[in-house]
Length: 242
Image 1 (cartoon, rainbow, N blue to C red):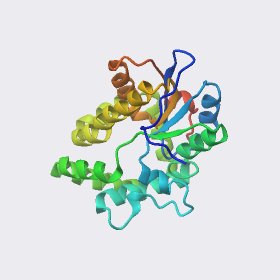
Image 2 (image 1 turned 90 degrees about the horizontal axis):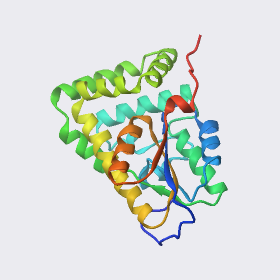
Image 3 (image 1 turned 45 degrees about the horizontal axis):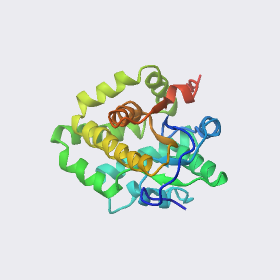
């Protein structure tokens, strides 16, 4: 059962910290995520999900909100791309979230969903995109549908070696995407984690996409919350195929 960020106040037994785990939504990180979670004294697990996406996370069909016919074509195209890469590179898109949720349930820990509603994020993004950004996003998604998996694996290796460079490239090429999908969501997720902290949940592991780790950590530190980060590069070895 998923939990919201509202509820009773806990009495922490020690000062605590927030552990941010950077993931890739299309890579199988089940083992390293479980290992990190097991080594951390936890009161709860938080996920970069909203109730709608969480509700379909474990459906066998793998049909997420981004794949539904009612979703705008641009977002649906990127959803198809994510599903394809997830099938080729891991255990399906969102596998790391499923692994963290299973771990929490095994340990009888509450699971908190800290992301913005999917529909709201889509509306904000589409309203913000410039015409040139729309064209480049469509072209990138179409290209991604035909790029071999080994090429994507190489790019993931390059990303883990220099994540800041990739993030800077996204900001230069797609400023609206970076603002809506990264910066705004980081601030909103930090606010929800701060709410949990005020309720006395001081030992919490947070699984988010790796692009969120640096910005989310900064947003939490601005709120004077102690943070420890584990990047995607620390969670997984290079996976490039020969």
